[in-house]
Length: 264
Image (cartoon, rainbow, N blue to C red):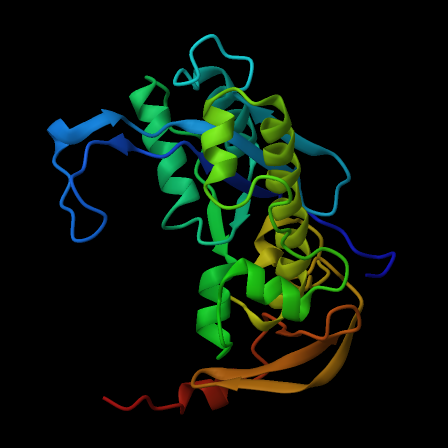
């Protein structure tokens, strides 16, 4: 990215890790678990977050809680960041992370954070590409150069969660590294995917007259015209990420626009 990059909106990347629902079952397959079969409900174990293109990583977990099911303290930490964010970035967060956070907020008597826009890299991958898999593990392995989604080291698979629930300090440390690594790999993936998407107009977040790219850069050069059914606009190429953005001023004269006819 170039030196002229400015980020006006507060963009927060976050990822959550949850305790599983514990229940009573009689078989491994084809089980419909009733509410009266739940032994312990899910709750937050940890979360990690960072502001886009900033160094500081925020992390909180429940390892030292007297009651591991009482996640209110760490929820407040995440709530404060979401309340400050203009835009959040997640992987599958529209279906999972954001809704799970909201569920725990309301169950703990907390008010909703300030409204934010949501960019989900899973949805970006599905919308614009035909990858073999849209999982974070696959996408970061194929697209990222520096940060790829990490694998569990000592505690493989579900064992990491079960050991954290037992209070294993070594497992909690691996959970911390795993959660933070997801954020770093998500941020690099977001930088790869966002030039292909225009669902959010980043220009509404600043007062400058300059046109901003989705990556935050102002290093734009003219690159022909974009045409819509209502007009013609200058198009610009971003020298930092390669995205194309268009100007907001319609270049068609008023007399020409008055003759445009839309199909009914």
